[in-house]
Length: 96
Image (cartoon, rainbow, N blue to C red):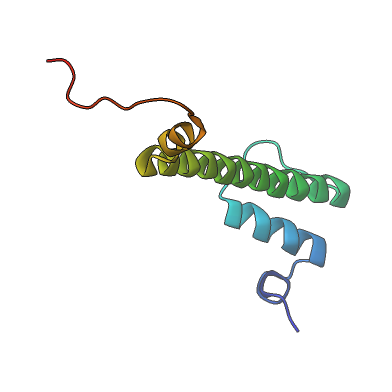
């Protein structure tokens, strides 16, 4: 199986991986360019780790917000409070 950047751009496998990840992540190439294979692998790991961390935080935050909104909208907290009360009376229509 031939890999696009290896075949089309005539890059070795490490350069092809680096080029692909940097391009897909849209982080650009900038002024500081990793030169050695070790630097390129570090950069790829850093980019993937950063994207993974951001995705995880976004997913976690979304889940917390959705669960909270679901509890608020369904009234489950109020039902739990009502279920745990003993020897109480609910008085409706009192006041203005």
